[in-house]
Image 1 (spheres, helix red, strand yellow):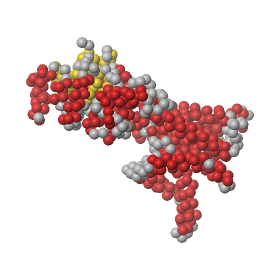
Image 2 (tube, rainbow over the protein chains, first blue to last red):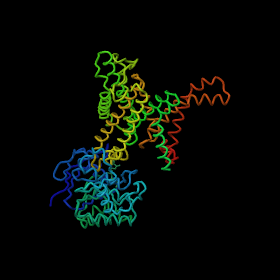
Image 3 (cartoon, rainbow over the protein chains, first blue to last red):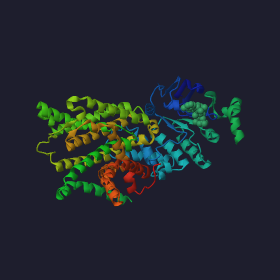
Image 4 (tube, chains in turn orange, green):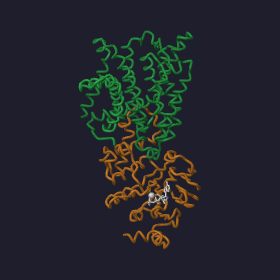
Amino acid sequence: MSEALTIEGLVKQFGGLTATDHLSLSVTQGEVHAVIGPNGAGKTTLIGQLTGEITPDAGTIRFAGRDVTGLAVHRRSMLGLARSFQITNVLADFTARANVALAVQAHQGHSFRFWRKAATDPRLIGPAEEHLATVGLADRADVTASSLSHGEQRQLELAMALATRPAMLLLDEPMAGMGPEDSARMVEILKRLKGELTILLVEHDMDAVFALADRITVLVYGRAIATGAPEQIRNDPDVRAAYLGEETGDA
Amino acid sequence: MQMIRVGFIGLVMLALAVVPVVANAIDEPFYVSLFTRMLVLAIAASSLNLVLGYGGMVSFGHAAYLGLGSYVVGIGFYHAANDGMDWALNGWLHLALAVVIPGMAALLIGAISLRTRGVYFIMITLAFSQMLYYFFIGLERYGGDDGLSLWYLSDFGDVMDLNDDSQLYYLAYGLLVLVLFTLYRLVNSRFGMVVRGAKSNERRLMAVGFPTYRYRLVAFGISGAICGVAGFLMANQSEFVSTSEMHWVHSGDLIVMVVLGGMGTLFGPVLGAVGFLMLEQYLPELMEGVCHIIGGESCGIAGEYWKMVFGPLLILIVLFARGGIDGLLQGKVGRNV
Ligand SMILES: Nc1ncnc2c1ncn2[C@@H]1O[C@H](COP(=O)(O)OP(=O)(O)OP(=O)(O)O)[C@@H](O)[C@H]1O
Ligand SMILES: [Mg+2]
């Protein structure tokens, strides 16, 4: 099987703090690869480097067979790399439909089109409504994003990422702050996407992780302390000590 | 509420359409020039609104594009009058250059300014416009500090005669309508969605694949080009071109007009320009009148202190009327702070 994403020797320091510490990792085409780790382990920082928002100090990132380490954010999106944000990051004053329509528009060639109305363009609205339906927001299309419930905003996050028709999704805690019902629904949505897309899933919700992941990497202080199948990770003594132990302790 | 808003805006546009007719009927030609100024500033404020209201780019230097547009007319006149270059008075040429030159200047200035954000963007746009201001002061040939009096206006041959105030007025009115229609199409197009989206959340727009910089830059260029049209009209209206139009105070006035009328709405800047000039025109008389009514002495002086009321009044409207005049018409009575 081919690798969708390969990270080698990635380093990122914030002042004296090493958020990513010589991290090497590869994600296979079509798999759901979960990245777990305690708060501050560097998961969001890793996603930031993968999308290009954060410039790594060292290391390389290869995606779809090419070195993307120095590539601008929008160019990586064009190559098929899409992210959702840990803290909902949508266009708050736009409707759900307009949010997704813009993401659709970004991947239909340049937008130096000055005359035709975008809000009624079937080439934008059609796909936008499909993606809203995929995440279960079909009947909320006309609602302003800021008026959506927290769970719905998380779904909108995902719809926007999907609307860029990515080859790979980088999901930063898609269930963050969701109740059990919304979480379960999100797991269902992601299960349906599994197989179609390569997914790198950062998530604290262990039920969701074990329900979805083909492989899991455990990140602690910016380093990968273990990578393997879910069963392997569940039984790894280092992982239990560093991370799962405290999680099960909470539960 | 929507009915009131549409009705009011319709009424304003209709009233503006008949100003010369009424002014000539009551034999008060002064009104034609006052209202021409309103139309001209409405165009300039609308151009600023594209970047400020829709794009979230607080340009504090739009007077520069107004000034460049008016200097196209001024410099053309100078060479026609002094060097016998009659073609330099051609109105179509003036109009074309008053679009192209300020547009190009805005692209250049924007290319650098748009790499900065927030206060830095405000300061750098201000700095560029002041640079142009001092550049034109240094151009002794075209009047420098004193400016140029135009004894020929832009020449449109048999098509129209700008020496006729009514014709100039209707040219301004027609151009305002054209500008508003163009902006309406623009802000609702794919391009407009990117510009507005970048105001709302630029980071997200980049994440879904938009190179936002180039769209914001083109919007900035278009804004400068439209503002240049206002400059062209302003020169022909005042029959005078000077650096004072480029002074930063006028950039500030344009911002106030946009905010006063309602940022990011199509007609807001029109209402803002009308409101601004009305206040500027009638506040002194109003204050003098009030002074007489309350039995004050030396009321002539009261009228001279109108700016002390004008400033705070604008600040109050801006702070307490969310969405400006247009917001009030929509029944938004919230505060901005
Ligand atoms: N821009 C920044 N400047 C300085 N320090 C930062 C910055 N961004 C992140 N950090 C630090 O880097 C470390 C890793 O942060 P990161 O957000 O990647 O963690 P995380 O694994 O996503 O945590 P969480 O589970 O809480 O989301 C933290 O200690 C954080 O405080
Ligand atoms: Mg995080």
